[in-house]
Image (cartoon, helix red, strand yellow):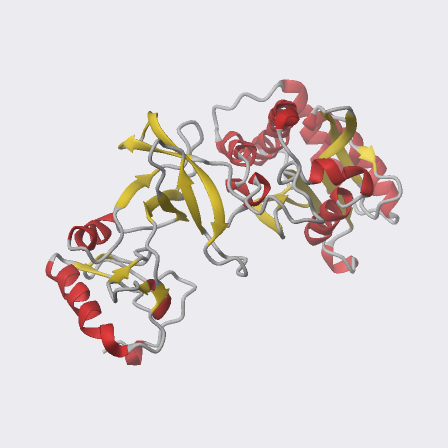
Length: 390
């Protein structure tokens, strides 16, 4: 699950950084030029490098990067946050700077992630760590390579890389790359402002109790989205829901959650986040009673475009995976033939994706890899032994 699904500020940064119409002030462009020139120089000592780069970085981001005292990372940007009478400066951006990767025994990007975790697990951060998912930007600079990542803390550390940029100065005609880097750096100022406003909204939240492990469905552990529209992608008429638990709690790749709608007649649903989905195949089997009803498939948020990432909401089916149970093969074959007859293929018929209810009813629940016959492809990173495809 990408970290950007836990807080929209991350995706908004990505959108601004990629927007050619996103206006960058002249002073930020000038600071970016200074930053890129300083990053291109080879330094004998790391402290000399930091002293040369840091002022330009601060001017471009329009924020002061504080030296991290008693921590093993290079710098951070904090914002004030309060809950009841407790006030702290919480980290929203962690900076790691290293020599060229070949000259260093540490990777700045990886180190930034561990540094973020270290900062949030400081005793002073206990309350704010348990209020929410600790959304933090990570800036790792190795030589002239800048990697921008984001991280959240749920029951685990989740890190997502948003951009990798070459920030060296190679030519006086390198106007395009200067603009790319300046947009990326200037976008931080907007994202930090957004996080500052967001922290003000947490005053009414109840912290997660780490000792009692309650509430188990604290919002810290789930994506920020908590509603789906009833009419296409019209969020003006939407159903709110409350997450209950991940469907695969022990898997870091879990993208599906059990939830309950907040209605006069609440119902159990499954909320899933996908990059591809065949709603046609799902609807075909749902109408035939061979899949849970599909309640929604579409954009995740009305205000933030998540690109290929979409949200799926379907009715929850109380069943068990069909491991070592051959009694239901005929029903599964019937579902496959029904989909094939409509010109679609399923692609991922495995026991975890075939659920069997108490009365032996069969439901197919996964349509991520389904699609049109002779059109749908397996994801590039999935190994398929073509000799066994038949």
